[in-house]
Amino acid sequence: MKRVIAHWTAGAGRASAEDKAHYHRLVEYDGTVVAGAEAVEDNIVTSDGDYAAHTLRLNTGSIGVAMCGMRGAVEHPFDAGPSPLNEAQFNAFCKLVADLCVEYGIPVTPQTVLTHAEVQTTLGVQQRGKWDVSRLPWRDDLRGARSVGDFMRQRITLMLGGVEVLQSNRPILRFGDRSVDVGVWQVELSDRGYHLGRADKDFGRLTRAATLAFQADNDLPSDGVVNADDWLQMVKATPRPERFVTQEEIDCESGTAQDAQMTARVGDLVGLGGVAGIATQAKQAGEAAQAASGVMGHLSAMVSEHWPALLLCGLCVSAWFALRALGYSTRRRRLLDARENRSLAR
Image (cartoon, one colour):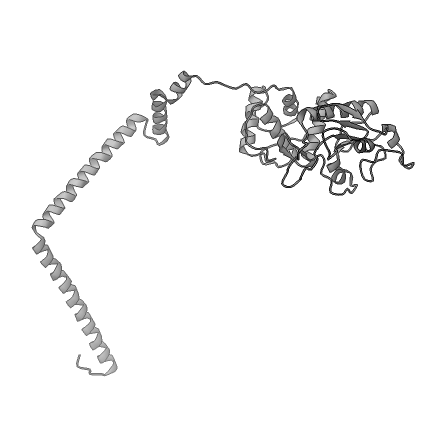
C-alpha cells in the first residue's frame, strides 16, 4: 500500500453499513475502532471492482480510514452539526493510522498520510469539493486542510516515536514569516502556556516575544529564530507553570522606591544629573517666571498712569509718517511732469 487517506463519514457517531462499505477502518465517537467490509489488500488492485471506494480516482494503493461524525456539518460559516468529532476520537484515529503505517511500511509525509481535503492540492488528483478533514471542532485555531493535516501527521509521528524525523523537516522560522508552519509553532507555544493571542500564521512581535520566553525557559539560544533544536525541544517541553505574584512583590514594584528610581532615571536621560538637577532647573524656571511677571506688572501700571501722553505721542508719530508719505508722492509727480514736459499744477 502506498498511502493512507483520512476522512470523516459525514454521518452519525456510529458506523453505518454504508460507512463500512467505503472505508477499511472507522473510529466511532467514543474511540471504538470498527473494521470495514473490505480488506485493506482489496485496494492493491481495483480493476476487479471489489474494493473500498473512498477517494475519487485514488483508491488503488490507498487505505481509507474515517472518523464517524460531522453529519450536517457546514463549511462556511463553520458548523460541526449535531455529530461533531471530538478530541478523544481524533487521538484514537491517529493511533489507528500510526499502526497502519507500521503494518504496511508507509512513511508519514504529506504525500503518503493526508486528509481527503489535501488530495487535490498535494497529489493533483481532482476531487469534488471535499473538505474533510479541514476543521476540528475543538480546535478553532486550526483552519484549512494543510493545517489540520500537519497537526494530524505530527500526532501520528509522535506516536511512532519519530520526533527527530518530524522536527528535522520543519523549516526555520523568524520574525516577519507567514506560513502554515508559523501557525503550527504558534499553536505549540499556546498549548504550553506561552500566550500570544490567536494563531494567525503571522510571525509578529507577540510570537517573537513568546518564542524568546520559550527559548529562555528551555536553555536555548535566545535569538527569536525557530530552528530544528527549538522544534525538537517544543515536543519535549512541559506546559509552562503559572507564576503567582505575591503582595510583597506587587508593593515592591509599585512602591516609592521604584518611583524614585524611575524619577532619577528620567533625570539622567534628559541630562540634568538626576533628581537634584531637575529640582534646580525647576526652581530657576520659577524664578524667571516671577521676574517676567514683575516686569509686565510694572509696564501695565505705567501705561495706566500715563495713557493720555502715550496716546498723543502715538498720534503725532502717525501724522508725521502720513505727511512724509504725502510729500514723497508730490515730489515724484513733479519729477514726472518735468521729464515729460507736462504741467499738471501739482
